[in-house]
Amino acid sequence: MDIKIFTEILKDRHFTDYQKMKYKYGEDFNSFLLTLEELYYKTLPLSDFEGNNIVFIENHSAVNQRTVKLLLQSQDGYYGIKAVEDEIIATSAIESIDFSRDSVRKILKGMAPNDEQENRISGIKRGFDFIADTANKITEENIYKLYMMTVGDFLIGDERLAEGNFYRHDTVYVVSDRVEHSGLHFEKVPEFMKALVAFANEEDGINDLIKAAVIHFYIAFVHPYFDGNGRIARLIHLWFLIQKGYQSALFIPFSSQIEKSRKEYYDAFTTIEENKKISGKIDVTPFILYFIKNVYNKINEGTTAVETFIIYNDAVKDGKITEKETELWKFVLSFYGTKEFSTKQLEKDFGDAAYATIRGFVLKFEALGLFSSVKYGPRVKYKIIK
Image (cartoon, rainbow, N blue to C red; front, side, top):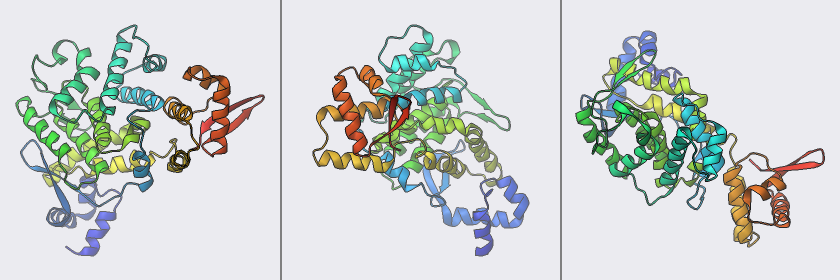
């Protein structure tokens, strides 16, 4: 194929929409697909429902390196309360589940649930506790545990998993505005999920963030459960990143970015299904590109900057930060994120430091360039610099 035409198609902003490209480029697009297959596709050890390997274009787009650096910041095995609050609200909204933010905050503070809604929130919190613990590896048994604590224990009737089954025992259908997708035949689900777990644990050189998106897609594609497939796909996406050392993944309201671009999220799935009708292949590139554009490369928006972590870590190395100040920093990072707080509010929420200690901590961290302050009349509020 003429390299000039190939490059023109590859650079076309609609190149992942095969219907548009076939109409625009005619026979040249057929040649383009053949060239992709011969030279550009990376084959994955995951199959479509006909037993053909799933593929993607490995080097078409890059993740912002600031995102990678931010996600790799060490967090000592804990997660951001504010980020998880936003995550629970957003991941539930994606599936049209209405959780009260007050109830989410209550459960995240460690209070006992009062009703069924709060029991469900408590289950999701347990799920975050589970994936935040790096000792919990990605296995079929652990995926089952994660699913049951976050989704399965709250289902009733035919939506519940059969006793002793890790996955569904009947057919499911996924209907969107353009495509009706039948989930994999239930007898094949264990085989496909076993392959997915092996893929997640294999050292294959694929970029971790790209691989996480592939895992996310494949769970939704196979649809191993009657309900909650999207929720579990998003949780396992985060879980994989944590297992790979991206400790700050649980300080990012990950699903908030998906919720903001929900149409594009579902369109990526639909595009892959439609493209298969033309190419005969499940090419997950549209889903990867969706994540790079709408999630990964927007993580820095509204998030603590990499430079802020560097300043903090340097201050720790220089012995400028006390043990109590370390506790307070982690609490602010976790509980408030980049939101404003007052010294009185921090004293009340933290609950284990005198006001003089709180005041000294806040002023010191402002002097270090870690906090900024804003005056509201006689009152002053602080927040982590982003």
